Image (cartoon, rainbow, N blue to C red; front, side, top):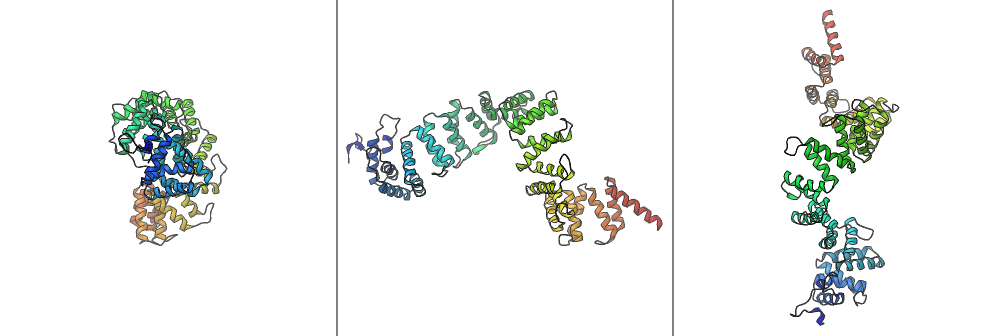
Length: 491
């Protein structure tokens, strides 16, 4: 055993203590010797480190890749995680690729911050040569954080806070986020505010502490913090409620490109909420929000342009942003776009295009589209008449509480159209729809009891339901009642 691996008191000097390129004791040759000795003694980490030296051929160690691979395998079988990662990478990659990768890894094990930063990016995102591994990414980036890299401190803190690929750890999250905040990271201050605002990582929600951190981050110019402070100040009935401050925060965030803040300030000017109503300013910010991809802005701005009350009517702009939102799978936009095609509003009337968008939205769970799609199947619009498919979609919409869908489904169950006949369930559906103030359900019930084809004829019940429907404004029910009166007079 050479003396360069033994300290004055006769103890082994660990290889890693000699591999820190930023320390006074850095000596790569001694580190390699120490790793070799401890590897022979069965120390897993030493086996992994000495295998790196053997594979790369650094610090006077001759290249011996066969032995290196054997040591990686030995260390991996004993539970050394870095060795397991390398072993898997050797199986997937060429020797040339591994030479470069393990050369970078050896530099990283020397706590070279540039190498550690590159290794973090590789394992955080995954590459053609390495698989994504957040725990390994954090191991490398921690070296950068310990060397006062503010971005690393913030990133590691956030990863521990959110449990991004690793187990959540509030203590480590707070430690690194506070380090980053002390070093001036506005983003870290914002993450601290998030933690107290949302109760992240088993933190007790604390509005005062969240405001403290959000305020610091906002003062440092963090866009998300500005928006968060705008939301807090616009929340009713708290000691922080302040409409003017909310507008100020939203405007600052909007000017920095925050899409939701742009939406909020646009809506504020559209309705004149705490400011003088200004349609041109509202349109400016809502369009900015749309351009930045905020779908709620696309939907609300389009509705305003269709309605023409808060903003001047503009079907072209409405159709454009509804199409953009619909193509991004926004169910409400898909529904509205389908209605425009179905009714020939702005677009040329096109049942097939309407059917396509109703289908897209219905499959996303949009309740009104499920009902309309059922009607298309029921009536045979743009598709062959299909009562069974109509019943499927009426059922979907009814489950979500759509009264018209429930009424249609009830009639289909009573008559056995498209579904197995079930008069009792059908009547239950119709009565529930009627109780939801849907007049057509009362009209259907009135006709059923009047005709007596599927249920026992009952004129008093027929009159009761038809009268209720007529009082709710159903013209067909009113006409039916009038016909019943004329018929009684003839008797």
